[in-house]
Each structure stands twice: as C-alpha cells, then as structure tokens.
Length: 174
Image 1 (cartoon, rainbow, N blue to C red):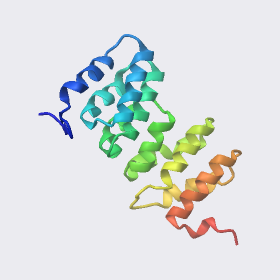
Image 2: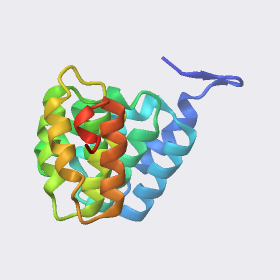
Image 3: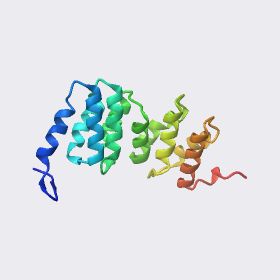
C-alpha cells in the first residue's frame, strides 16, 4: 500500500531513504535521518525505530531518536523509546519522549535521571514532564521539587514549568 501526496504515490520515492538507512557510512545514515525528519514520512517510522535500537553508532541512534520525535504522533514510537532506555541508551530525546508521552510507569523509570550528572538529561526529563499526562503526578512532583535545588539554572527553570503544569501547590514558597 502506498502513501499518497498531492502528486500521487510516494512509496517509490521513499525507497532511496530506506536504502540510505542501511548505508555503511554513519554520516550518511545520520543525514538520511535528518531528511526523514524534515519530510515527515511516517511510513518510515519502523525503519527509524530499528536504527534507534540496533545501529552500532550512538551518534546515529541519537539522530534516530530525534527523528522519531519530529514524526507525527511520536507517542507511536514509545515501545522503541522504552526498549532503547531499558537497554541503557539514555540520551536527551529518549528521556524526553518517555517523560512527555509515556505512562506513569515510564515516568517512574526516568525520574532517577533527574539526579544524573548530565545536565542535559536532567533538563530533558523536566521539560518532558512539563507536558506529561499522568494519572498520579505526585512521584513526578516530588522529584521535580528536589530539582528546584539543581545547580543548573536551566534544570531549575524546566522543573518550575513542570510543577506549574501539574499545579502542585508545594512549589509555591510560603
């Protein structure tokens, strides 16, 4: 089955992108991921998910995570983000996706990242939480309250925004 654009079937047009993802050159694979993210062909989602999970280059895997977030409905890729995180691949886009689109279990899994040595990971979790839909936000709010004392101004600001999103009254100083 082909996807259709204004000019007709686009399936054959996407074949070079699919082949490009299989290139031996990591720079080329990363460039193909950028192109996919720009033109948003959701039919390539599973191809990009495979890159996220199995590519030998961490740099290319980071590009895949970024591309998945730019595709329509990034929450469709939650299983791939979960698997990447569980395998130890913790980058800004993976933790952001789990914090932003994940369920309460995903949030509990990424909350320890708020104590990471990596400022960008901490900030990404807090930014994702600022738009999260949680049934039980208390554990996230507890962790975010601790992040208000983070040495990084960027993390503190992201934590404040997330606490505002959850409307947690404990974030308001007496």
